Image 1 (cartoon, rainbow, N blue to C red):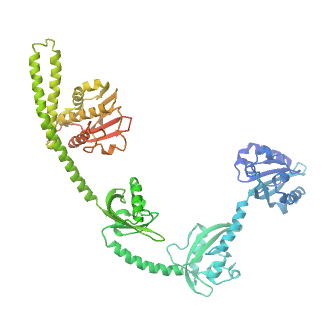
Image 2: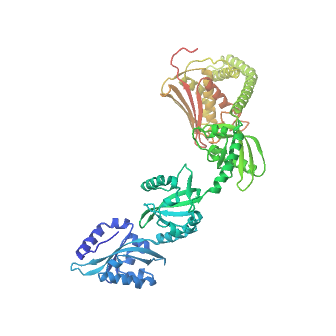
Length: 618
């Protein structure tokens, strides 16, 4: 930034403007410094204060030369100041000197200086704008050192294509002395057959300069002083110079690399042909997980639709990263892993079950060889067998329970009915008769449950009829009312409409009863159980929710609660069949059931059933 000479009136106006524009000065990226004719600071902006490390009051009014310049620079800078006061601005309009910061460090500043005049034209001080160029000068020195010591050939070219700079390696590569190249056109180093094209490429690059490799996708050649051509690799970058933008080229002779690449390419083509001749996916990756070779089957599974498989972690499910690392460590320690089952992520994001064989090849760049086979169908079949076996166990248990409970229930019913007959002559107020009838009713319900359990175990066709969900909920609650009262649990039924579903009412009531009992068990003492039902307008279904304020279920347990024989309770308090049975009943009614819960925050069990529309069912 250049600052012109100012008169006193202009300076007053400037000071006023500076005060009103303080915000601008404080965000300016240059230093503003105002000195009077004694060398004292009358103004310095935020940039200057920050550089020196002082507050405004610590600078303004102080002698600039004695307080803020290194002793070695004071006399020289004072002489410059005196020249400006004498009106000799031109020789020192641009001047560089060091300043001394509060921490004792020195910074190199490039100043643009101007004189300040009063209304009579008398010089009364100086106004300078400065830029910290300390890092710039260091960078320039380092740049020269780096260029000269670079193992690559370095050439700097201006926008006219003239060579401005070369290093020692460039002399060696091309066989020229430095003096023979400086000032010459860069095309002197380009094969004659493409020199005209190169001029066009060069001009095009200067129109849109960017750091990039030269000749991407093409083989590049350079020519030596003796006319011999050799393959090169060239990197281009731009650099600001005093004369404008220049291009810095880094040149590497890749003759030996090309020979080695040809040998390696031939070997890799043979290896790839072998790898592609297998139906298993094969992946070869380094200790950092970077994949550098896969076969055709691996591309089909993991790198389809232009997806790049850069690191093995891209196909490892996040929850299995630690397990995978454990297997890598085992393989590295000499254990060849064969047919261990895990999961991988396909190109489309789907997780599949795979069987993996893993081995480690030691060396300077150790690598893992992983053979992966898709075993999704095998796992599905195995799970079906397991589910079938679990279903058989449930059926056998249900049959046994029904058989062994049937006789005691019938005996109890007979005795209750006999007691009712005996009490008719004694219990004139019917108090005892009412209690016996309540017991009789629950025994009937127990018998009905046993019958339904037997039918459920044998998987018959459900006896579906239109049922009111509200009635089913009321009947289930009525049976459990004594247990609710005993634990001082408030039960709320929030079903505002008489929703109807096509269902086996006894089985749905069985679900309600079992889920309410689970909620009762989850509440230690006092609490709330709420049963609600609302229509889901999006798919014409009914959302039934049974909520409690109990102890909740840990998040990590929820995925397993619908598995047969999985229970969060002790063996004396549950078998783990309740939710498995509930899930099966709901699914046989073409519905869905899920759980939302957090430990110590209660549980919501949500059931979706289709609403009955009055259409005849077959």
